[in-house]
Structures are given as C-alpha cells and as structure tokens.
Length: 134
Image (cartoon, rainbow, N blue to C red; front, side):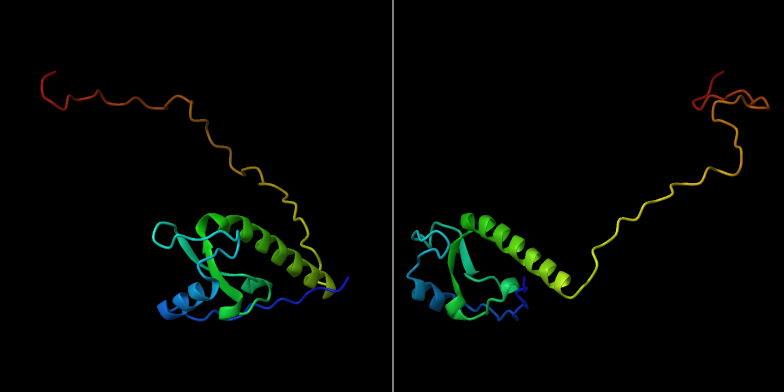
C-alpha cells in the first residue's frame, strides 16, 4: 500500500489581525463541533483544520476558531494518523523495525565485603554528653 508523504508546513505568526480575520471568516463557529463560540465567555483558539503534521498548510483557509474543550479529541486523532503515516513511510523506505535489546544483567560483585550486620572488630570510646554532666 503506498504511503502518504506528509511534510510539516512552516507555521506563520498568528497576529491579532489574522485571528480577527479568521474569526470573522467563520462567523465565530467552532470548526470542530459546529457550535457557536461565545468569544467573551468561552476559551477558544485558532485551530488548523488539517493538522500541519498531516500536510495541512498554515493558511487562513485551513484555520478556524475552536473551543479548547474540542481540542483533545482532534489532537489524539491527528497524532494517531501522523504516527501511522510515519510508520508507513518507514516501511516503504525499508527502514527496519527497532529490535529489542536484551540485557545480560549486572555482573556479580568481585570483592567479598563484610555484611553490614557484622560486629565491629574494636571497641568504641564511651559517649560524652553534649550538654554537660555525666
């Protein structure tokens, strides 16, 4: 099956004038759910209808206002499709899948240390009081 070669377009700056132009072009309707956006009360942003990572262009025609609540579902689907496209491209180019490297583990220590519970070989001097007295 042929792969869809999707390059990422360069992102342009999103000036206030451009945001207003895109808002007016879509009449304040969310491009993801087709519901009106209350610009003063709702949190919204400018979304690329066809994601840049899927070959979408950063033009006003490919942008529109969207609710922040609508963003996660679209992002999940865009990332899933982009990952599949990258995998198809790698398969088409004959790039091998990453092999699983199996570790041999750690070598056992070479020196035999005394366990921490071994008794001391010498006696310690008696403790002195820090606050005077006996």
